Amino acid sequence: MRSVTVNNIIKRYGTKKSFTTALEGVSFEVDKGELFGIIGPDGAGKTSLFRILTTLLLADGGSATVDGLDVVKNYKDIRERVGYMPGRFSLYQDLTVQENLDFFATVFNTSIEENYDLVKDIYSQIEPFKDRKAGKLSGGMKQKLALSCALIHRPSVLFLDEPTTGVDAVSRKEFWEMLKKLKEQGITILVSTPYMDEAGLCDRVALIQSGKIMTINTPEGIVNAFGKKLLAVKSDNMLQLLNKIKACPGVADAYPFGEYHHAVMENGGTKELSAYLERSGKAFELKEVTPDIEDCFMALMKN
Amino acid sequence: MNKDKVITAEALTKRFGSFTAVNGISFDVHKGEIFGFLGANGAGKTTAMRMLSGLSMPTSGKATVAGYDVYKENEKIKQNIGYMSQKFSLYEDLTVKENIRFYAGIYGMTNQFIKEKTGFILQHLHMEKEGDKLVRSLPLGWKQKLAFSVAIFHDPQIVFLDEPTGGVDPVTRREFWNMIYQAAENGITVFVTTHYMDEAEYCHRVSIMVDGRIDALDTPKELKRTFNASSMDEVFLKLARKATRVAD
Image (cartoon, rainbow over all chains, first blue to last red):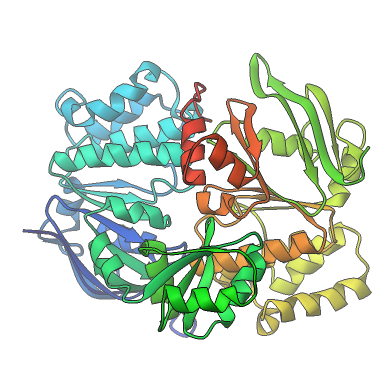
């Protein structure tokens, strides 16, 4: 069964004469129990999409269902079934940790006790601070509380809008471990992120840019569709090296990629680029590599 | 003082009550260097940056920035540095040109100078047509590139960049780093924080803060060797996982 269906959704902001298009005909489907990532930079349309699916915003065109219910006609029913963690911390800062969780449970006619098993793993980490005001929590603890509050009514679909933005590498990894455990409980999870390296942790991802979905696939599927040979090169003078790689015939694109530069080959491979770089007489290291999601994202952006 | 050292810090410490946010950090940053300042949330990066930019008085220790003492000459420091962050950089309801004028005016640049350099910057950024548009209407990537140009408009000795590329698309992120390299080549020292570990590789040297201390400081190459790691991501995880302090 499909948990979420999105059909040609369009969203514009502004007036009829002067507007910006946030979503330009977005379509996709998410299966029940799937961990689905929506990956793209700020301004790609991720938040607009989540707000439409959580019935907080009306689309200008297209249709969508969540849990089989229409986001416009059945908005009240959807609200009972979804959990939503907005990008900005939006709990009550002047209520304590426990009061916040209690409040969200009560709003949905349930109690902490009734669904404690679902939030236990996450909530137990902040429970020692249950009498502390939410506004006084650390960033990581706020995130855990927000996730607990989004889960306390046992939603069937969970929407997490950029839960890891501005969070350091260690806390990001911890957060994704929590998501994996939640997935085991059978909850469908839609998560958005600007971090390309998080794509590999999803079952399937949609890469989104300027209101359009560029591709939808499993992380492996996206990498396999790259279709060109990718080489990684490094030397002592990286700036000079980049210019040289760009000048080599057969190189379609070249850009810095961490410790190495990546060279996307239109034709030719290791041998050709090696021969070209050897002419300058400077030492370099070159190897063929598997593209990662960021390579694929850039290739799609430039198409 | 060695003229080549643009930032010096010696046992620099900041306490808030009984909490030691920055615990005796010592390091130097050289002219034209791209210095990566990494650390988990709550490790003390922001507090350290506030002290170095003359916004917060240290509790103890010594530091000079652009040759000026952080205790006595913090106003001088402010005049000689640039600052940009992801969270706040430009006024959304002013136009591109108005933003440039405003920031340059604060630093006391003359009208003639502002006019000439504004034209140069807009041309360089390929934004000649956008000069009279509101900053709000620009894509994020353009805003960040413009914000960086504004932060170094007055030719500061050092520019502090606090997560300048957060949320920016991967192509623009690389264009942004290209601008950082250019600035460094022109002699501007770049002090940068980031959560993208691939960007740590682009820095000349990287320091990693853990619980208020600097636990590692070296070139990315040496750090990877020392910690027997294949990437900066791995180095960072090895160090940051040792943290005992609860994040901010």
